[in-house]
Image (cartoon, rainbow, N blue to C red; front, side, top):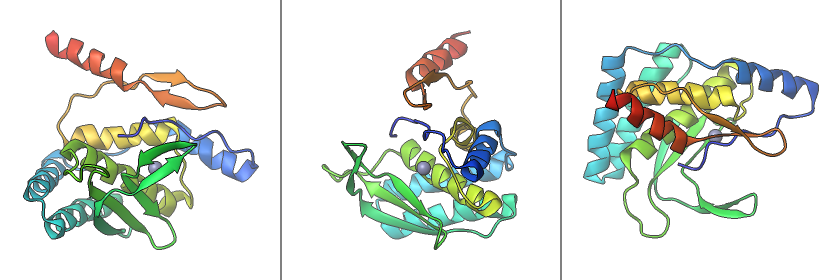
Length: 196
Ligand SMILES: [Zn+2]
């Protein structure tokens, strides 16, 4: 996954209010774990098949389950093959997924840009949940930001779907009011917890 880095806080008062609301919401109600985990396993199996139609159907089923639980209209889901390369703040990176609020469409890519290999299942799953959380924000609040709250909500869903132990996010202060999630420190904490 691209490093979870927050957006810089916006200046316009209305946007700022929404940003802070998103920042404060550190958790999210979680759907029944058995159902969500089953949908995630179906997605893992579909990805192993390498068939774009199967991956598309599994992504749509997972997202529909979430939409029903959160009582929002389901977004459209498009699964595409090879990740496009894109520039983000001067760095070339692969686009993992995107959400278009206008058409309420989630797009995810199932193959890496250069070697065209299937992406790792946890990455695909996290990308899908990340884009779904953008959809949820847009339906509930009319806009969406990458805040610490946003990333923590995604992570709650992700660890729940994959039946992973919850580890409190470790945030480091970046430049310009941004924060980044220290995934390495969290992996170390997770290993420590499992060693007990
Ligand atoms: Zn995003």
